[in-house]
Length: 310
Image (tube, rainbow, N blue to C red):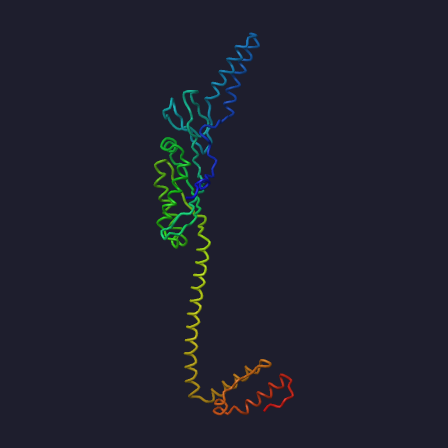
């Protein structure tokens, strides 16, 4: 069974829920109490003012938060959901409210794959695909599933394996659009309860075993050769029919046959050193003796021979 490490790679810049998010407003809120504390310390010559200013500044600096235009912040108050915040500046109560998740509502691309998966006709294939999806309900994405990007990736991979398992290799290679539509519908059904919608799925590559590729290549070559032989046979039939019609015409018109024979000799004499074979019956029936002698004489002159034709 192939390892699943590296089969799924979510290409996005999703912000980690627990990563620190410093902003200018938090810095200003921290500096104001600190500056007041330092002034009090200078006037009273006591470090209490500075200590109080630092503690108060650290406490207040946790209140302002800034969400980017494409982000929504999920706020929990004492562990209970109280709403979404953003985009822009918003405030929370330090140590009472927490931002559990920053939800990115842009279109996200996730590449996923199925390795050594058997088709319905038991052919192992490797399939690479790309999923385009987005979060339409940040509340569900944060509360209904633990890690929605990973859940979407796993749902896409299992759906791909399901589709491959009930599809033959021929349909997989020729009917990509239909398979992509089925895959999108299946992933969408699984991810909709999480507040996620799938926009499209695109299959990048389908890799089959090298031995099977060679067999398919030989099969295609044999099919092309068969078709070429069929076309050649049809051409022979058409040529035979044409000869039959010409023979009937020559039978009723000896002059036309004579002219045709002369044309054949002329065409043959155009090639230097050409050898022409004429049946004796044709010589007797069409009186071509004199014509053949002249043709032989011309052929001798073309080849530069001094021998006298018999």
